[in-house]
Image (tube, rainbow, N blue to C red; front, side, top):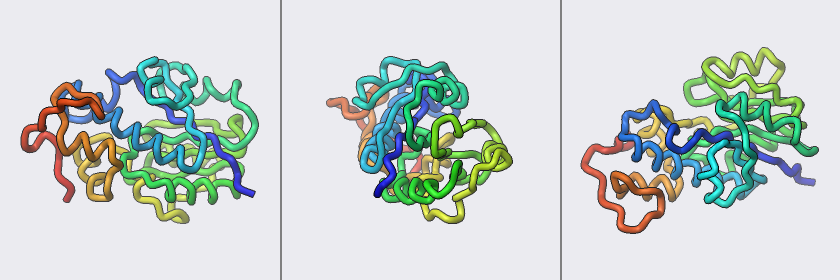
Length: 218
């Protein structure tokens, strides 16, 4: 019998998203939205996605939203008391190259442990934290979270699951180029191909980006 997972995706306010990317604010916000749309599509193929956010803007994406305070760890901790039964995973929202099969494999592997993690591409952070019940998540995100979650008893599935898209989060333009090399989802791909300076993903009438506005894959 397949385990039914709920996947929480903490999301910053749109205007504050991806602040480390060296792009104009409107372009950063549009990119953050495009990546999140691709993540939601991948998650919805294998589990039940729920957005954790204090920004009502994200309701327009169509996924269930649970209002939470800012901060990844704070958002998860706030959501835990009201969580229902069943396994829950926390997934970062900036994984534009995520494939449903990668997430499905990671969740299947996580089902064999009370608590588990998958590290980011740098090997120090956490892109997926999963637990048999929400109360067991005990989130400790931020710099060095892989080690903290590991010390807290989370099984490290990074080597056991072949999932480069699940590990490739995007914080810098170099990260974005690496994600493009893996192959990004359709929302991100369309934005990178022809974004307007102030366009939202899917908005008609977008103007082409100037050459070099986004890094090409290596």
